[in-house]
Amino acid sequence: MSVIIRETRAIEGQKPGTSGLRKKTPVFMQPGYLENFVQAIFNAIDGARGKTFVLGGDGRFFNDRAAQVILKMAAANGAARVIVGQGAILSTPAASHLIRLHQTDGGIILSASHNPGGPDEDFGVKFNTPNGGPAPESVTQAIYEESGRLREYAFFDAADVDLSRIGEIRLGEMIVQVVDPVSDYAAMMEKLFDFAKLRTLFANGFRMRFDAMHAVTGPYATEILEHRLGAAPGTVVNGRPLPDFGGGHPDPNPVWARALMDEMFGPDAPDFGAASDGDGDRNMIVGRGIYVSPSDSLAVLAANAHLAPGYRGGIRGVARSMPTSAAVDRVARALGIACHETPTGWKFFGNLLDAGQVTLCGEESFGTGSDHVREKDGLWAVLLWLNIVAERAESVTEILTIHWREHGRNYYSRHDYEALPAAQAEEVMQALRSRLGSLPGTEVQGMVAEAADDFAYHDPVDGSVSAGQGLRVMFAGGSRLVLRLSGTGTEGATLRLYLEHFVAGPEGLAGDVQATLAPVIAVAEDLAGIARITGRKTPDVIT
Ligand code: VG1
Ligand code: CO
Image (cartoon, rainbow, N blue to C red; front, side, top):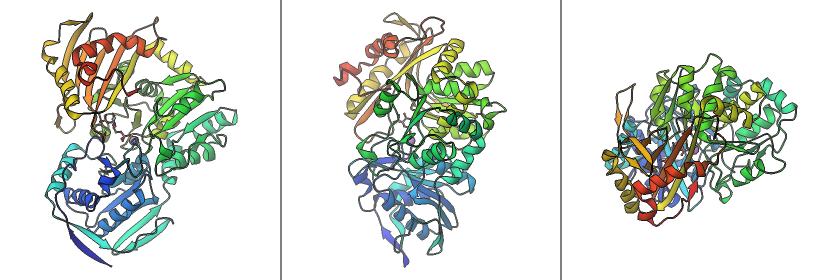
């Protein structure tokens, strides 16, 4: 057993995107590819010597192999300790929690989140900093530069570490500490939420369905919902994590969690439905016969968080990603707290959370979370919803309709055009970009544009500026369209069109979402020409 230095070459394209580095699995499996990126991470943080890291992933294909490689590289780079989930499994929020709990020097999470997994699907690696959050742009840029510069990586030539049993094992000088992936996370949830009240809710016959989509939240949801809260056995479906997620997209939205939607809109629907994604940081909430859009979910959670023990004292501020609807802004105004608008990607919430300026954050892409960790957290959102339902003794439908009556309704939808040729996607972006300057004050198809820009974020905490974060056009009356390119896709380019229309009420609060948004959709086509340029008549995914 010894440390060996292997030669490597600069590998192109190792640029971490919205959420780490994501590529097709065969790309990651090329000799030296994963190793190159991992060495780049260590180099970018001034080495691993003497440091402690957390390691785990969502269990997708190649998770186990990648974990062994990373452990051996950490040992060879002089790390003191790696805390790894049993079987190399950790959900993203659980990893974030462990990084914070043990005050480590960061963590490496293996996941491509909601992207499908398998030998021909996607794999991903992300580095989280000691605050438990995704590396900020300064760090991902440093990783990228290192990946193109380094010429060798260090590897510890030893047999694989047995990650199947909890306990400590030596790998050379390094300690590998195998921990239960669920217990610390579940303990934190018990502190934040009123488990006694939730046990009573379930004991009184409250019925729930949680679709783990054969991804990482299966064991977490089973332990918390069924074992600790007494939800009926079978509440959690697709609870066994599989390396290929059973062949599906572990993406909790009405398209990919179709079975759950059908059940919740069916004749014998349970009281509450939820789903989570590959790595457990996303959530979808569905009531009996009603779908809760993520933007609305964030607003409802902000308005009601004080009903849960962990937020009894109220929330200090909220933040949402720019494309997320302004529903939460209205709640913040009503509560008299600050509301921040950040670029897409959880890493932009980190500074605000660390500075204590915000308590809740959310994105339209089924992500919600709070200052309890530094990642979005799917099960956390589900438990907060349940706690609110239990306290208010109202259904999801009642909670949502009362919310709209009080705050008005931000009709909202996202249209995704996937796997476009990069040049076409750029042409669409350019079509809109070129018109931004002339739009304010003009009328397009009966709608008056009030403002238009390419969103740039000025971080109020560290002063950094992130430009080019999405094109947006704001119309009189609270309608808006946003266009941006995905940073997480692995095939061609994915174009995302975000549409919003505000209705103050009391009339018009129960309309059909796509029909209500039709005028904004028409304006978007007029301005950006998606159908004209790409030939695509309809989006691939509508959420
Ligand atoms: C998407 C979402 C974004 C989210 C990111 C990571 O990014 O739109 O809101 O933060 O995925 O989520 P993009 O660049 O493809 O639009 V996850 O669950 O991968 O960690
Ligand atoms: Co995810």
